[in-house]
Image 1 (spheres, helix red, strand yellow):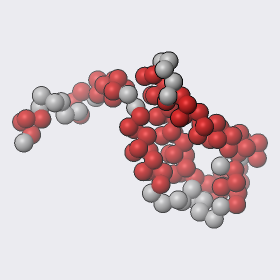
Image 2 (cartoon, helix red, strand yellow):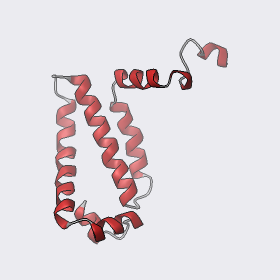
Image 3 (cartoon, helix red, strand yellow):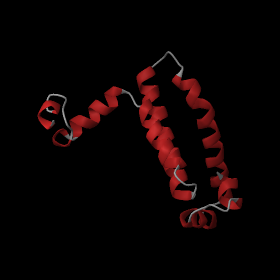
Length: 116
């Protein structure tokens, strides 16, 4: 991430601001965090322990990482595509929890027949 923001020509105006105002050590830390995340997510997704919570954590971490890329770099539709793909990793229990938060906004399967 550090190299992409300091040397990469496709950084956004927010990325330029981050390079100017954040210390180099913070950018290095984010760089290593991205590398650890990219290596850890496939291993954690294959883990047989705490599958549901690990899937939710991995999916949300990937969404956060690609959202940050979207804000800091102008790299086309890649971050948006990867955010959409990462939502496939989120377990059904998380989607059900979100649906309970906003019950009037979600189309229930019993209501689907009346839509047609």
